[in-house]
Image (tube, rainbow, N blue to C red; front, side, top):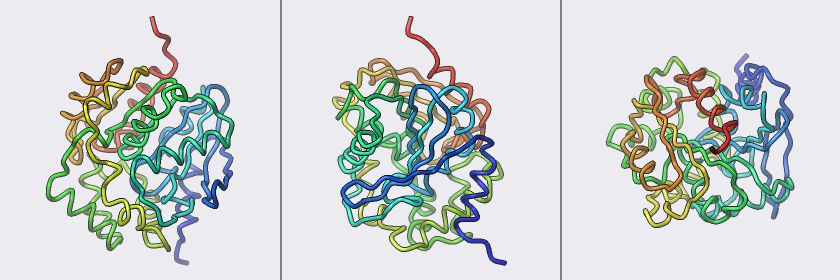
Length: 283
């Protein structure tokens, strides 16, 4: 029997090894689906421009040991609605504020991966009091220019999604593609193939990941950790190094033998770095 999108998603949920609750909330007629796990201080994990909340499958269980982790399918992705929208940073920032307000979360740690990092940056600038600690993982919005072949892979995957396009693209988002659970690859393709799955890419036109000014980044006074895979072929580690010098209270942690998705390439190392930062106290 041919497997379906829900099967791939369930397989990823099953390997998280943590009691996971799925809920959804509708705000202004747009439904957001999200995961909940653990107890304690809220930690919001924002995935990148693909798949959905299940991208965090290597880390949700670990974070949930000490925190109340909330992982949404960002509007336009995963199981959430995919409306006609600008899909730029102000749009995503507004969506996130409304989402947290609806869940009655006044303040949280925010962890953003790739495009999710750009959303986290914009949200922090717009709502500094709603963010405790900020974590940027191989973040967009810092000026990285995607080179030719990774760009080809991104366009191919988002225009004509297929297992072949995914295999080509995977070599640019992982240091070692075998480190990615195949169910995540299959789910990514399935989401793009469904009705509205390409809207965020086609209607956003890259605006969410465009460079933020140094002046904007200097506005961020929140304690910030920048995590970067040293072998990231999509966004060079040099952009993480530069951002760590611009954002006032930022520090940088580089993970060896990891690409654009370090939580998949080096899950144990990534999870330890993330947990140490979130549990640390300012001296």
